[in-house]
Each structure stands twice: as C-alpha cells, then as structure tokens.
Image (cartoon, rainbow, N blue to C red; front, side, top):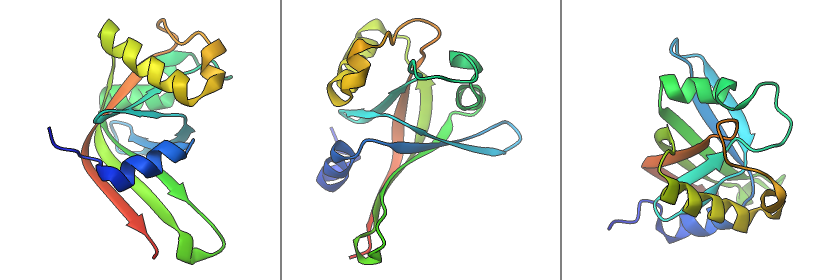
Length: 144
C-alpha cells in the first residue's frame, strides 16, 4: 500500500490540533471552517461534534456542501512572525459520510485519542455525522 502522506506530513498532522476544511456549494461558492481531525492510516476523519453550532449535523453548510460536491481541500498550517518557519500540509480529496460501523468505531477511537474533550462527548447518531476524507493529492510546504 502506498503512503499518500509520507513521514513529514504524518508527523506534521500528528502534532497539530486544528485544520481548515474548504468545501464548495453546487454553484462553486467556497466555504471554509476550522475543525478537529484525526489521521488514521491513509484517511483523514472529522466529526460534527457537540460544540455549539447554528444548525444540527447534516444541515450545516460544510455538510450540505460536501454531500452535493465531495471535492474538498484540507489545510493544517504553522504560522509565525518569523516567516522562515512557515509550513503547511494541504490535502485535496473526496469527502464522504461514514456509514460502516467498524470504520466509524476506528475513526472515533482515533479522534478520542487525539482530543480528550471528545471522550466525554456523544459523537454518534445522525446529529453527529462522521466524515472520511480520502486524499487525492498531499502537498507539504516549508519556508526553509
């Protein structure tokens, strides 16, 4: 099995806590949101968690967008006033709601291992859709 991420991207993603997910609606209007994520094997996962939201689960703009147009971009970055230390990992791929119970169990275990706050949250059920991002392109960039 090939490693779409490579060691540098895996290390970068494992030490960071927040990503930005870009989706687009059917008219091509972009939408970007910050979110928590986990990398499990060759797949990125995020869940619509129990933090306050304007709308429930599948009614959120990010979810409506990715259901209509599964092409997404996902970026995790390091910013510093010292621009010689800037870096990011950019993933372009396809998003889908996870329906397989075994896959969902593994993904939620990865998310709970990374984010202790998730251990006390209910993360299953239709109000908490779990999303898989299958990478098509992974780009790692560093200023130096």
